[in-house]
Image 1 (cartoon, rainbow, N blue to C red):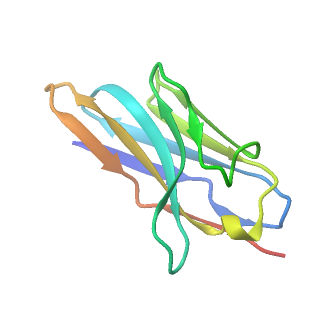
Image 2: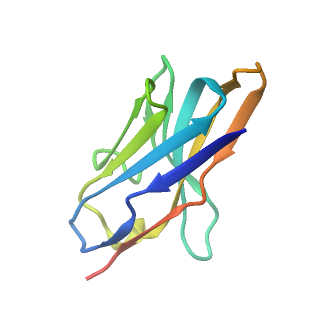
Length: 120
């Protein structure tokens, strides 16, 4: 099985920065896609940024120019650098990893989420 764990959330003032980390562990052969989603209270979960292996990184319009996603495939880690944070960025942030296991089965695993609160 594959587990995903996020870390790095917290409380930050508007204009501040946070870096979220994501670690996937288990019988992983290869990760094809790592992505970050977020869900604010009363709203649907939305895609924030996606990093497909060998393909173009994409961002939600609302975070372009402020957030950066990257991955360290040697360690099955993913990161989301968030700068110039706004109160509307407040949400639970989730990491997802899509890939194949050593047993050649596919997986799409999600973390438990990490809270990001932007407030003065």
